[in-house]
Image (cartoon, rainbow, N blue to C red; front, side, top):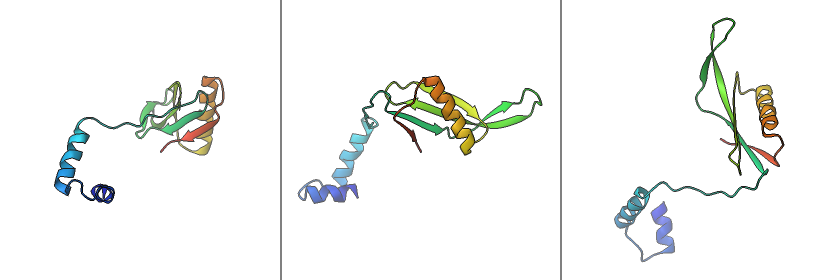
Length: 114
């Protein structure tokens, strides 16, 4: 598909084999990254980590799985992390509230990443 788009823009350009050889060489040079500009206080990015952690209940000794919540301010990369028992709405609201207290303010937007 990428080669087909290339050929539309460059009808006399590389044949498919040569195009993929050059593309392969390009991708070996390094992983491309997307640079994003962030304004201070603009956005707080939140999400739960993919894997759960296990904690020991100090009273019962029972092992419990917990979700790992992370909140990151876009501009400063200041980070808040907290374990919570679930991703349910009430737990999400509580960890967001805790993060905002930790940061000492409220951003213009809270963005839940996926």
